[in-house]
Length: 393
Length: 176
Image 1 (cartoon, rainbow over the protein chains, first blue to last red):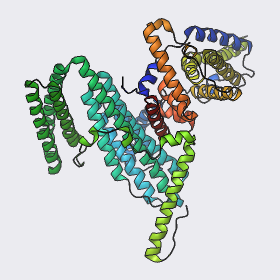
Image 2 (cartoon, helix red, strand yellow; image 1 turned 90 degrees about the vertical axis):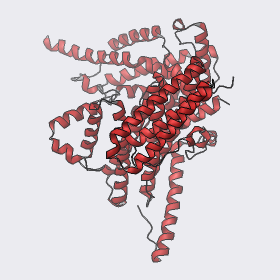
Image 3 (cartoon, rainbow over the protein chains, first blue to last red; image 1 turned 180 degrees about the vertical axis):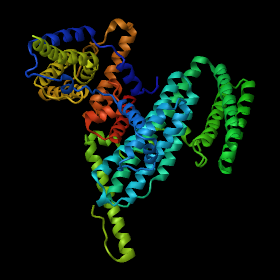
Image 4 (cartoon, rainbow over the protein chains, first blue to last red; image 1 turned 90 degrees about the horizontal axis):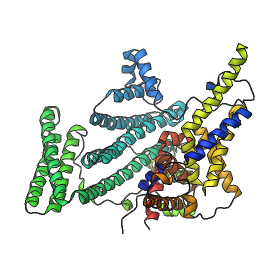
């Protein structure tokens, strides 16, 4: 009875509960009567203008964007590709990307694109905050930086929702590959963040880092969920069938990776190919071990070995397709993860007990960071010039 | 004669549009309120008041930019007023599970859901208001991050962080 309860599962279950339809029906009638007795006080010419036709719908910009792109010249869209947050053509760039995603039908290619777009956002943010002087930052630019970060979050959010889709289909291997791709991405994104030089950089980078931390935490939860799902599936199918299924999955994954290595070998650098091939050999060895265990009747061991083989093949696949520049990623580090490993920068229990306000907390963090950096800057400048050229933004 | 007809038609349009909004959002709003207050009766009263108040606002010719967001906002204000006027008191299992349409579930399912519901609600109530509100928006109402951002005025990152922290705390407390 020590099974851990996942609040998300309970919330999802409750969210599907039907409401009291009779009450809603009767309230509708009352409301219609009430409106008859209390008609609009003034003459309303265009009720649709008064009454927000816009409800929660965020699909419109993409459609609008399609129209804009179709109407505007291709040259504008092309020129926009080098634009940065705050520049006139930047929104066109984001729209063009959205449209490209809409017309990309292959879901794997979509994920690859989203990972690359999220990386682009971090690079843009870094470029803007390190090249534009704090005192020259316009409001437009600040808002655009926010929207670049929003775009970063939304790309990753969409990728993360794919793991859910795969889990719903029972395809834990695919879910695992997507989650692994995200995990590697997080490491790469983190590497792109430079040391902040002033208050504004600290504030903005704090947001970026907090976003990455948050996704990392959620990816860990995804890995947990995938593991739990696999355990449940194993219970249903039985050890022998599960091991057989996993061995087949490993064989398929290895074949797919061999194919992709052959296809792309000429276009990739030697180191990437070498890393991928090493991973492939590792996957094959694990599979051989799993097959031996299966023949000896050690089905659980066979399942675990085949599972590792699938994961290793996934990493080889990701190295080739998405992260040719990535260093070898040791996924084993994540095998024994738990919630306590995740440090999101606050002690939640204390936080809740004290009932402190979220914004106050953030403000405190920012202030502490600012003081630290100012101190650092002061020491640095004194060492160099004997002068205090403290930032004053 | 023609002019009069047109006037009536315009006014009816506003009413029809509002009824359409009711059809679209009443279930979500009532579930949302129900999850945040104690008891079916209170939830029903506040749901009714949300729609009547919104109509009052509209009939005065005032503009609403986003009807769903506005309804959630009105509901939220009413919930806050409700708690201001009444000190919180513990709720019984029967009371909280009343609006569930039992006919669609077996007895066993219903009891399961009642227990789950009571469990999550109890722990949600211990979270800071903004945490529980965002969790309900996200998981009970099924709103997107962008929608929650609009409703709460928090930044996207803040919303993500709050969801993550709240789930982590709920997970920890529920499993204690």
